[in-house]
Length: 278
Image 1: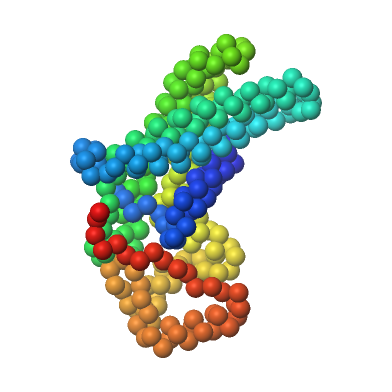
Image 2: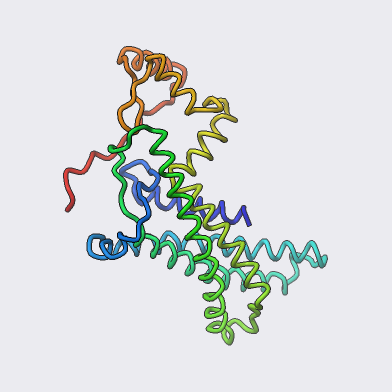
């Protein structure tokens, strides 16, 4: 199920990235608080829930479709049935539709309601980059602890409802207790993990800065220690939650060297900062 979780996270990530083409996609700058539940209803428009629901619907549907394909492959390996058998193909298509609806509706509802517990974080108020990352790690852990059981219950109970509604139109459908508990538990854990790894700063830090980029030879194995060493040597300075070059000439020299080695380099463009809340 980890593959389906990765696909669903990638689908939501890509959709969010395309929906905000004017700015670079960034992790959500939020914290969890129960006090935000009643304030968010008045300050945040309905489109926040609609946007989260749409993103969750796409990602959950991809996860459900992947789960249906994985179940077909598993049964083919165990029982020896041919994947090209018409009955197998028909059953797979029905499972793709049903599980896509179950996972999609569950993810859309859970991720949409998750916005009620989120409050914005003032990044500029952080003392150090490490403290901000530690705070986001705590938030990511809380999000996982909330999303995993909520997503699991939504899949389990939503599955019973959707299977009951489609029972006559789609033929005989089976949503047994044992299968529903297994699928919902694995789906809940996979969906929560994919969300945390794809949409939080700490998750992206683990995936990119601690695993992918060091393996590719583009970052040291301990980026935090490397930056801290550069800070103590006077190369960098801390400005709240970010590091800055202490000497502009060094920054320009490194940038010129990098552009000389990478002729296809294009500078990043960022959305101008908002001057106020509409």
